[in-house]
Amino acid sequence: MKKTFFKVILALSVFAMIFSCKKSDSPLTKVTPVELDSIASNYYEQYLKLYPLEATAQGDLRYNDQLPINIDKDFISGEISFYNSVQNQLKKVDYKNLSDDQKTVYDVLDYTLKDKIERYAYHPEYIPFTQFGGLPLDFPLLGSGQGSQPFKTEKDYDDWLKRAEKFPDWMDTAIENFRTGIANNYVLPKKLVVKMIPQMKADEIITTNFDQNIFYGPIKNFPKSFNAAQKDKFTVLYKDMITKKIIPTYTKMGNFLETEYLPKARNTDGINALPKGNEIYTYYAKSWTTTGKTPEEINKIGLEQVAMLRNEMEKVKQQVGFNGTLEQFISHVKEDPKAMPYKTNKEVLATFNGILTKITPKLKTMFSITPKTPFEIRQTEKFREASASAEYVVGTPDGKRPGIFYIPLPNPEKFNVTSGMESLFLHEAIPGHHYQISLQQENTKLPKFMRFGWFGAYGEGWALYCESLGKEFGLYTDPYQKMGSLSDAMLRAVRLVVDTGIHTGKMTREEAIAYFLNNIAYDEAGATAEIERYMAMPGQALSYKIGALKIRELRDKYQKQLGSKFSLAKFHDEVLNQGCLPLDVLERKMDNWAKKQ
Image 1 (tube, rainbow, N blue to C red):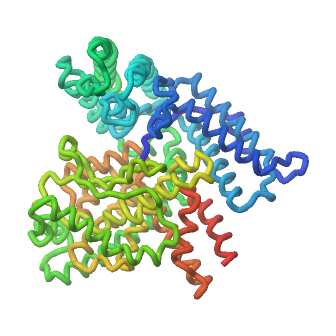
Image 2: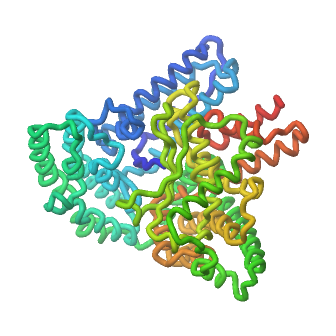
Image 3: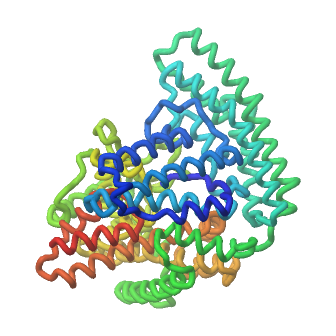
């Protein structure tokens, strides 16, 4: 859900010192639980100062004018010192005397610090952004007036000018880091770099026709409260910003990537081709899954899941009486009129509302605690519908903004239920992201770093686990809806195979695309974009399935252990009641819960 830059390097002496930190049980260093709360609170307050864009995204307006050069070696050194100081404070906590909930807080903060520090050992600052993520891709949305940066007051407009003033320095540092990467043979694949160049030279970024420039959006949409003098002032200032800061900076980066970086980029696909590449990938697999599973173990799980899901798809193929191979059936359902029964947008939206109506009675037996945050289903706005995917947009804990499940419907007659309609709702809406994120944000007992924190293995794992509840909710009875749920599950299983295959050197980009197309009904362009996403973000795609499998594994374990004492509602409540957790921390927490039942 969040795009965060990989940063930094750490001196080995500091690295060793940090990782020697252990939980202390000495009475001489005892700190009260209240002080653990203080450590957690102070950590997050300082973290937001380091990463003000995250504060902006959360609606914290204090740092909206700031843009630290967070890929600069001096910034990195200061960040390391900060994490080191928090670790030293944690060492003084009397872990044994903490409550179970407080131990979870400790464990999450301890894990977070160690993970951030370990990442620094692998020089991610050498690749400050890719075609899939990074500040140069996020900056246009921020400056458009359509993102999290507010443009409601004169101060808001001034804040953005100050933030944009620092953008050229960030980009110059990125160029220097790319050059350092070249010198150390730590570079991106050519096939990704060629996608980055047109991104830097996109018309909506570098055009001097201001009405067409995305950064001119706030000028085209002034608040009604602005007077003529304010409008004239900011029109001049924003035109100046675009012509002197934005256009030259993006043009410079595009030219650098094309003339200097691309010739030095590599012809290989996986991160294993870099110096210490296998070690780097093992780290990313561990970081994204928050487990100790090796790439080899994850690959094996993926192959098993793909085989199981292909067998389930064969059953659907037989149920509808299709004669042909499974590959032919996967392609067929994308064109089958029976899978596209809708004529109007209202019909599609009514079906989604019908899913909510159908599952609501079962929700009461499967969850004891539900969010207070309101929920709505909406069609995606026309201006962004063509390029949008279905998504969940988080509401606010105060209830002023509901959680919204957006559905893009550029052509309702082409809306195909085998894209995963029922499973999509369970994942993105209820009880998936809406329940999990809303309950997390509403829980004021959590320290803020946990209220607004995110671990993909848990957050996406929970949402994918919720897809597996479809049968219990009385869904997936229609073969095309069933095929949709299987297709969604297959996507996450295939990711385990191709991500580990590419980054251990067992699969090329082309082989991964072919494997993808053999199991999932994407066109080649869509499959290519997916595979290149995995190339750009090693390990990220592993988190979904590994997280879902862990939650299912825990459920099965406790059902077997507890027998009649097991309550599914209590299990779900316990999984959700402290927000996103690393999976190993979740298992420790849930084991403690099971002992008390």
